[in-house]
Image 1: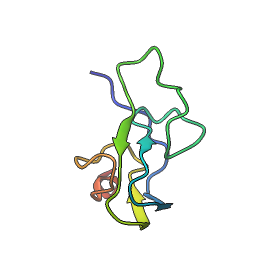
Image 2 (image 1 turned 60 degrees about the vertical axis):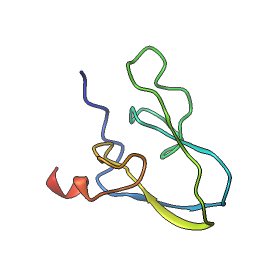
Image 3 (image 1 turned 180 degrees about the horizontal axis):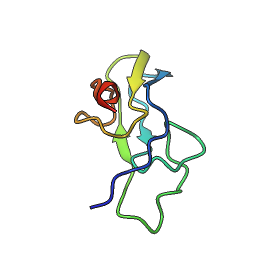
Image 4 (image 1 turned 90 degrees about the vertical axis):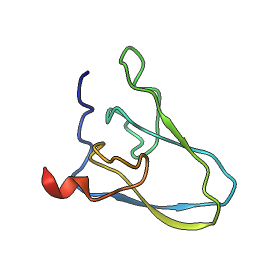
Length: 79
């Protein structure tokens, strides 16, 4: 299995609304990071849906190596 592209070596801090579904880019190719823009088409990657329970800021993974997709788990520190 191929590795996704590293979009950036730090998380994206984004404001989210409770109950709204966001689609996190898992391939690293999107021009709308950290969100999917369809650039994964033709790859084995698919976007990850995230529907937060509460509104506020979240840290979405930018390196695409997190074990807790789509949220950052600090994996970028090992790159």
